[in-house]
Image 1 (tube, helix red, strand yellow):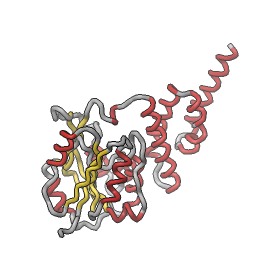
Image 2 (cartoon, one colour):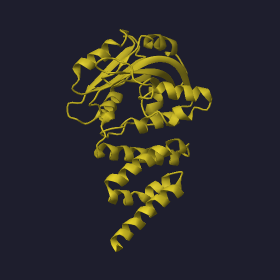
Image 3 (cartoon, one colour):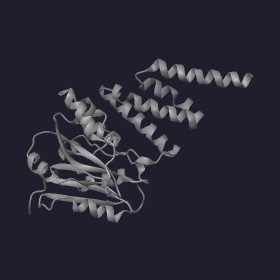
Image 4 (spheres, one colour):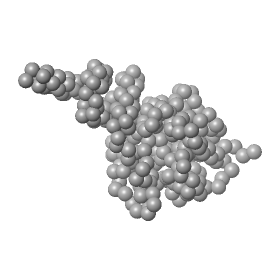
Length: 277
């Protein structure tokens, strides 16, 4: 049997035509293991990815979403880096609308802009280590993931955010390659577009878990600080009790303590003033 060099893990739920498009974009090679995990029980992509990790045999882990696909240069990069000693190799991507494949602005889930920012200050690549938030568009050493017991959060959204931060912290050597190997596609009903408060609340708690991890590891928490405060602001507008309950944890985690304290105390003052009035 041929040695498995690459394990490609794809969570899938009720989009067989798009999954087929994704699978067809994968080169036919004996050293590729494709693991498509069907989320029939609605456990979420995080659970599906964790199941995929249990089955992976390759030297490198590669993640894809079922509605995305790989670009022609993908196979060239497989050949180029198959024997690399690095812990992780990051690439660029394109973005398009899923149905029409009409290009999207670069800001949409782009590793490309973050890659450019990181390369501009290379070898300072903290933005790649801590602030990408996605796991596609990279080759990840399976040995590193298993050694550090890194798993995906099983949340309804952003299940890969903490995983991405953890592998960023664990990776000793990270290579950056501006070659575009992956196309992220946007659908009107995909998880990334869900702006209901239920999803926003989960995004807040994911941000909180990332900040806790970075603080514990004594890593650069400033790079994720704005994300935490953004979703904490959404909590304020939707669930006042949760806003107050989370005040102390956020205050302890944020790097801008004075601003958080001022905002919360102002809210409490106004609430008390209105009652007295």
